[in-house]
Image (cartoon, rainbow over all chains, first blue to last red; front, top):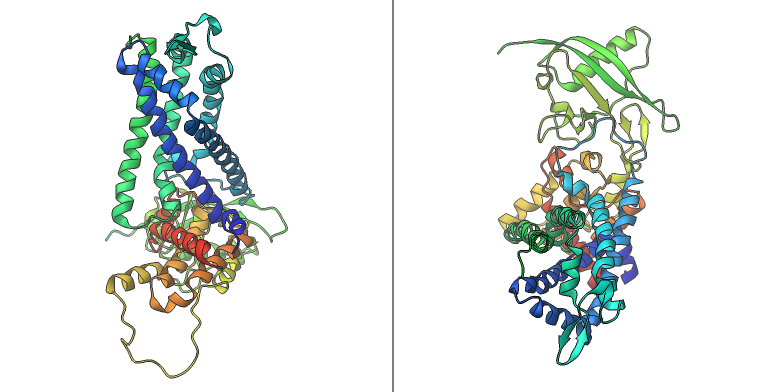
Length: 232
Length: 253
């Protein structure tokens, strides 16, 4: 049994989905935690410092490469598995069996596609301008100063982006997709890596549903907070 | 108990063989006792078809006691019909109301090619068992009873997995046509017993490889298989299979 064999069988492909999924879940914790700095109500000082640390320190930058690889693998593998699985039933049913499973468990590919569309918009809004756009004055934004050096002001960027109600709505809808994607994905990932003990499974399911509600809620509150001027 | 006769309309999938395309054909069946089983209702229809010179509907069945795994039928959008933890042969006509239209389809999966009408070839399951769903024991004297101590909880869990009759309802119910509930039941049955220990790793790897070769899809943990299973095989077995696979995959040479 080679590693290639191990991770390319039907169970192996699911293991790849599960491991990358859990990695992305961990990323969400970091992302939500850092972004929560906007609620310090210090005109973005703490948030900008945190964002600057993430953008300039070597460890998060290396992890960022891993993050992009993980997202890429999760997306490609997800689509390949979906297409492969669909090809296994050439003639479909006249009456579909929908009672035995949750709609969101059957719709992971659609929810994932919505998230991918969001991700492209999200990268265009924040990652590209801050990483590739230079220090400042993009769209006339103020720069942020730390120890006498000027840096890109991500807080001001957020303020500007979230003035558009359509953008706020799309972000909140994406958080809804994320919630349902996580409601299935969190517990399913742990089943796939082999947690079958009833006690642990019950624990992980509860944590999973809690995570699926709290994390997307925290993210959804960010554009809402800016749009309604709840942060100063 | 009140006894009722039902008049029903059936929409049955008819297909000559694997190489032709099939279609639904409508039949009226009248004066069906609600104490009949579903298969007896089909027997009544087939008798009628034979007397009128039509080709009777082909469907699988054997013991008609709910234990052999031979009967199939995807009835009104659920494998084995509307009742829970039940096989088609044990489904009774009291599950339906007078005037109902019942849609009857075969198991749909490319790994289960249609032989004729509602009969599918489930030989893929046999080949998965042949790949490792057994224990190799040399012949010789029978060993003394209870010479091999087994924890009662493990024996019960192994037995619960061994309840699988290999009917294929899990594949029929799964949106991915995955055979993982079947496979996991067979692997979990033997992985929890000392007799299964010597071949534990090669068994799971070989059976998964055979399942992939047969053209079943992969599991996405939706739970449809568990809900449709006539023997209530737990989806926890799939997580156990995943663990067995991971363990064997990482440690086997």
